[in-house]
Structure formats: structure tokens, C-alpha cells
Image (tube, rainbow, N blue to C red; front, side, top):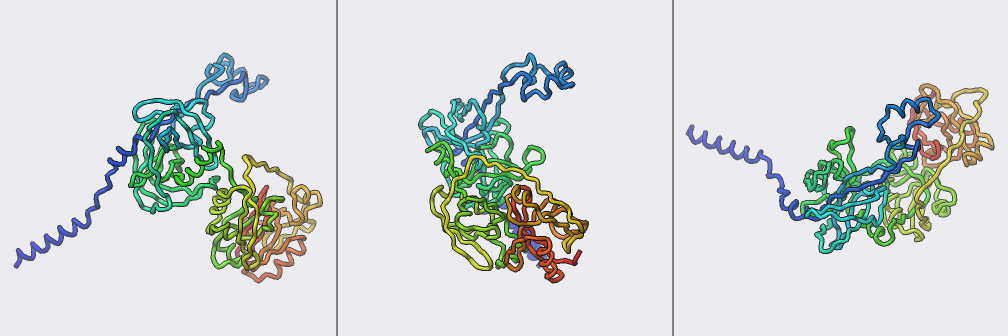
Length: 475
């Protein structure tokens, strides 16, 4: 009986241990062997032309430090007397072949400013490449080598990627060619600062300098992204890598192949995310859409009647779930075409139609003096603010018809308001009221119940934004 009991316990332990053992990790060898031939190493050379005592030299000839620096600085310093007139700046990156006749995708920053681009294939051939076009906004570039019968990658569908799924990168980190690293999809649709047109795939695949422009594969051996950037405090890999979805990249390369550039739509609005507090202020059932903070005068949005305070919920047949969705769907719209918008205004939806404009290559903005004269009484209102009414000249300079300048923010003031902000409107229970005088504004505040929250439309610098002030005691 004892032996039988011991045997039963042993079998149970053996079974539990086998269940506790991790499953076998996936084998990446076949994928690397079959797909590696389509991955290339890209080296670029940029010829920097130094000018005598030009921009590269840190001091002018009449600077007291000039003579000291001239004596002790290295002779190779650009612009230094006796230094070479030109020097070469070299860099490395990766790419992958998308067609057998030599078209290659990589990152725009890999070939940016390059005077010469050389592609090295896995069979050790080195061929000069021509840059067909580069799009800095998505960081995608298309280059071409003169060759035929090349191995090309197979393209996958990033929309079918699942968080937690295994993915593989092949590239040349630090110049080590055909390096294979693996990890999982950490997140999808990531928005990064200053990157409005790419819903990045976040992974924990080890990516380092030199991997840029290389492919990200799924386990079927299909390219699902272009490795573009990492988040790092050291310059090296720290577990956060970001790839451009291949469908976004292929849309860009189609335009680059046809015209060498990318045309994007624009409607002329500045937007911000709809938080829970803002949703409550505008009477939305949940945070959604893109909140219009300002509308550019004369823009397609202005002509269509879009107003600051509108929340854009749909653009054509695309739902705008979060604010970062809008630049992508608008950017993909062809300039000159008609677009239907659904906006939330005053507690109800409204349908609008506009003609999509074209995004310019560069934009300029100016700075104006936004300070007013201090109020004689200098008494702070219940928000802890001292406000003044702008003069006619200040209104002209700022391009506004009404508003109040925040002259001082007293200690303990409520809300994220700063000196120099201009309060343009107050939004309460979804109703937006223009602010025209200190007396009017303070009068509206006086009617609010203690603890009531409000939302303000403010002008800060060269942009507009909404600020929500939660309820609290009077100041």
C-alpha cells in the first residue's frame, strides 16, 4: 500500500513538473536562412565642405578666443586654417529588397544628405544606389540599384499582428552584417512625439544603430515593419523599439516611385486629445475624437465652418477614436478631394463637408508680444488669476478679436494656466462662451457653484489649447 502511494505521488509530481516546464521557444533558423538574402547593408558618404572660419569654426577672427583656439585646436578641425577643405562623414544602416529589379526600402534618416549610397548584398557584391525619394515625415526612403533577379521579401499585414506575437529583425547593428534578433510585439498603434503620420509597432526586439531601415518579420517570414527608432537614455537598446508598419511604408514608396515625393492632405486645424474631463465639459459620453483647439484662417476647415471647440468624430468613413488618428486619415486623403466630417458641437453631432488641401513642405510661425497692462486693482479672481484686457494693437498683433491676458498667476491658483496665456472662451456644460472683458469673465465665475469644474480655451504662444480646471474651493 505504501509503495503504491509513493508511486502515485511520484507520478503526480512528474506530471506537474512537465506541465510547469516552459514550451519550446520558436526556431528562427529557417526564417533567417530563407529571408536573410533579401536584407542589405547600406553605407552612405556625405562630403562636408568646410569654409575658412565658416560655420564649423567656433570663433570669429575678431573673437579674443580665436588665437588661442587656432594654436591648440587639431588641424583636422573643419574650417581651421590649414585643415582639409573637405572631409567625409560616413554612416551605416540597413534595408531590404522589395522587388527583383533592385528597389530597396530603408529609413529616410539613413540616406539623408548622402552624396553616395552603397548597397552591400549578402553575396558580397557592392553596388551604388540612387535615392528615388525620401519622406521625412514617415522616415521612409526608396533607393534603387541596377541589378536583376534579386531575392525580394514577402509582405505581411500589420493589422493582423497580435500583441505578444513573436517577431524577428535582421540588420547590421554597429556594422555587424546579417545580425538576427528576436522578441515580441509590445504594443500597436503607438504615437510618438513629432511623429503624427505613423502608428508605430512597438517591440522588445534588440535594435541598435545600424539596424535602422531593416525589416521586421513575423513568424511566417513576412515583413510587417521597418525598424526605425529606439527609446534610449544611453544611445543603445533598452527594450523599446519602434517599427513603421509595412502598409504605411508601401503607400509612401508607391508615391516616391511615381513622383519622388509624397503629397499629403491637410485641413488646417490644431488638435488635442479629449481627456475624461474635457469629454465631460463638452457633453460627450466618453473620451473620443480629436478636439479642435484652433482653426487656421482661410484653411479648408475654416471654409467648411469648423470651429475651435468642435470634436471631430469621423473623417469620411474613418472613426477618429483618438486625436492621433486624425492626422493619419487626413494625410492619406488626396488633396483636392471632398471629405465628409462628423463633429460634436454644442451637445449634438453635425455633418460638414470640405475640400482637402495639400500639406506644405515647411510651415512658419511668428511670435508676438502678448503682455498687457496690469489691472489697477490687481485683485486675483477666484481662480487665482490677475487678468487684463488687451489693447486694440495687441489684438491686432495676436490676430484675435477678444480675450483676456493672464498677467499674473497667484500662489495656489487653480488650473494649468501661465503668465502670458490669453483666455479666449469658457466652456461649461458643452456651451462655449467668448470672453470679452474681465467683468464678464469674473461674473461667469461668480455664478459657478463651489467645486464646479470648467474648461477654458486659451492661446499659448502660437497655438491654442483647452485647459480643464477641476472643482475646488475659491481662492
